[in-house]
Amino acid sequence: MDEKYNLYGTTSLGGRGQYGTVFKLSKAGKESVLHSFSYGVAGGADPNAGLAMDRAGNLYGTTLTGGDFNCNGAGCGVVYKLTP
Image: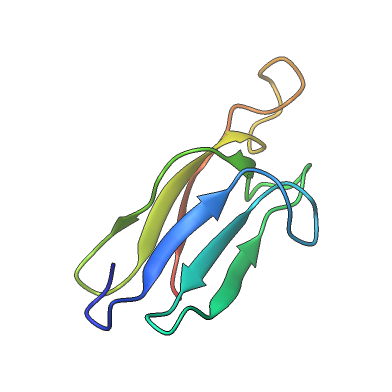
């Protein structure tokens, strides 16, 4: 949650690439997709954990797949940073 009471989270499915999203839910209940993951790119896919926020408001998370594809062909996953 940020100082304006917005909540942030991830979905493991959905979004443009169907490989998960990072979303924001405002205090008023409005949902916004901040990022859609796509399979086969360095940015990772399938986020399956919560987010951490630093003092500047940057969000950090991990994905199960994507990134280096030397891990069983699905990728090793990545640690990502998102600036909303």
